[in-house]
Length: 143
Length: 88
Image 1 (cartoon, rainbow over the protein chains, first blue to last red):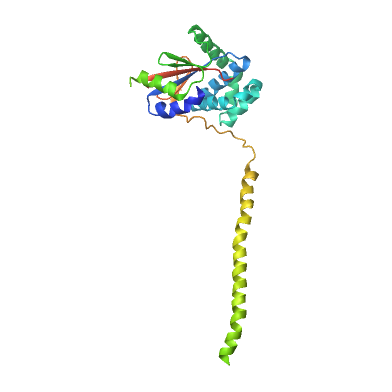
Image 2: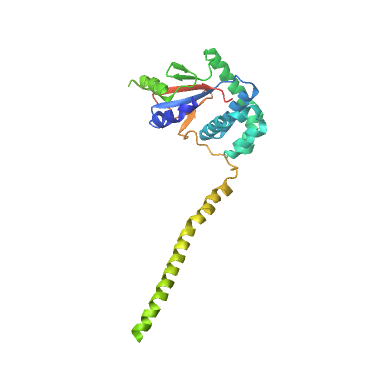
């Protein structure tokens, strides 16, 4: 959804009509887990930290297959997050356990296509244009 | 006599004035030559920035749900969009 996310945020989130939840899927090995855990650890410091980490990791998606623990720590530091707090969270394992739990929950909810966007119960699969999401959102808003 | 002297000075003075005018014009034409120096300046500043900037999406207010997921937007927004995705 990332391609359309900016428009959804600017059009609907900014107007208070929509909130966007990110639910991590862990389908592509250890670094799927590590990246989701890194975001969760950024979120331990602030909600804004979570979204900044989320956005930056998606921007640098091509780096993530080779990323190691230090990559995530340095990314957190580059985002002005506290290095020690982040490293403690990342190394502690609780964030990894939590994102694994979320992943099990989405499997239990039969979400397997990557990405899947749930708009008030209507599931949209794969990368779609803003127009597709706009129609679903306006429908959910009763417009 | 004076009038004749003025007449003989007229042409050298006019010539000198044209020369000065031409030199001034050349000075003006040199301005564009300085432009490439100005355009080279950004190349010198195009070094990698140590701090990444996030430009993909503006961060709005948000929060964290009880299940540990995070949301962007207002908690009481009428429509919830869940983005199931993998960072990789």
